[in-house]
Amino acid sequence: MKITFSKGVGFGLTSGVITTLGIIIGLESGTQSKLAVMTGILVLALADSLSDAMGIHVSEEAEGEHTSEEILESTVSTLISKAVFTLSFLLPVLLLDPPNTIYASVGWGLALISFFSYYMAKKQNKKSSKIILEHLVLTIIVIVSAYYLGSFIRQLFT
Image (cartoon, rainbow, N blue to C red; front, side, top):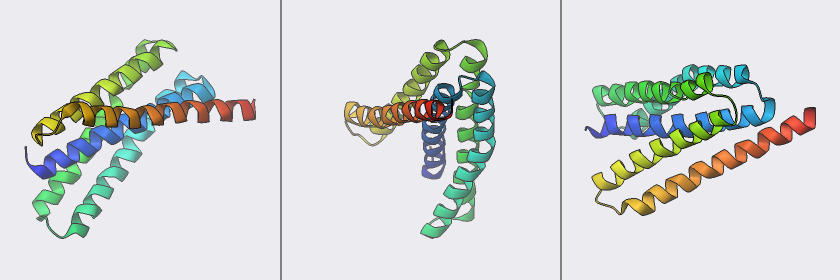
């Protein structure tokens, strides 16, 4: 896998999972509205995917080390992977009721982060358990923070 493609997919997957989990957990704890959670995921899949793709595009251009083709590859792979991984969280939201939506979403997100972390560690000949643990801890910090922020906002305004 070319580095520019791998970079885009890795960024898109990680950003898609972590941001979407934050939105799901934060909106669910703050609103307890399936509609709000679904809307958040859909808006995220569109706006944040485009934003992240643009961010990768500008970052790759700023490095001054990549061809136009490589920059396009990073941009498109970020856009598609971010949108696909973000939209993959719609299924549990549509099919399950809280708290099962939350459990399924967190399980799915942690599995995706673990799988990609393992892949990345093996590709770099590094110890996978350390990298997986590091990435899971950071993801869990986002989940817990989003939950408490959503709960705080709900208590503040109800």
